[in-house]
Amino acid sequence: MNLKGRDFLKLLDFTPEEIEYFLDLAADLKYKKKNGIPHEYCRGKNVALIFEKTSTRTRSSFEVAAHDLGMGSTYLNPTDSQIGKKESIADTARVLSGMFEGIEYRGYGQDLVEELAEYASVPVMNGLTNEFHPTQILADFLTIREHFGYLKGINFVYMGDARYNMGNSLMVGCAKMGLNFVACAPEKYFPDSELVETCREIAAENGGSIRFESDPMVGTKNANVIYTDVWVSMGEPLAVWEERINDLAPYQVNSALMDNAAEGAVFMHCLPAYHDWKTTIGKEMGEKFGRDSMEVTDEVFESDASIVFQEAENRMHTIKAVMAAVIAGV
Ligand code: CP
Ligand code: NVA
Image (cartoon, rainbow, N blue to C red):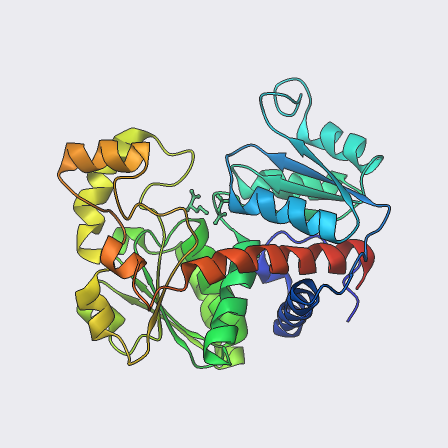
């Protein structure tokens, strides 16, 4: 498998075999990291990290992974760079291509990262857009594989706003890798119908399925994985909280839903999560709407079924695999 020079913009662009290759490579790199085995496959190279939205995991993962691969990294944010305000995406792409061997981009529309890739002559990697978050799915699938030993046939239930980056990307990932995907939400939060059709066709080829359900107890029955994400995503106005809470409160992941799932079910979340009042927004919205948690209860988040921190660590190993593969052809 040689993925050198490929952009990593969305999982729709990759075959199941290629996705499996990223996961196998990530597992190998994780083993090497844990055992102190050097893996500087990108020695002497450099990667640009553009973040138009905030980040803890993704930025840390790219920076640590770059360092472990022997590669330099430069962080560019909207306040301190010319991107967007004084310089177009197309010009930025061509400038950075002269200095770096890879470019990561986190921002708003998927069209922006696609445009960056069109004009760049080095691989571009999507660190999250409104529509897709593909590096997160690699981490999620590595974690599921570590926990259950396989991916095909896993009953995967996504609770909440399924029409945004996480719902879309998880649906694509499940279709590609043969998991049974259920999105459980009110109908208006189901993904775009064209993407659903595409995923149904992909799932049929790979032995998976795609289903939508609005009853939380029906949706979570037999689930092996219950996954959720914030109800209000980065870039959305605070004004939408009230509507989201009203619409999505019945889909909060709580102990009743976990008990309703299959024996040995796990809880997953891309993080950050509003499971208590220990964040400014969590406290402000919690007080305003009389809730002690949002998309997941603190009880489930802190329970033995929760594998969210293993999942978070795997962001680094999987992002490292992506960079090693597309920048160095590992
Ligand atoms: N899950 C995730 O992308 O986290 P960050 O926003 O902290 O990067
Ligand atoms: N849907 C979330 C994902 C964060 C990793 C957001 O876009 O803010």
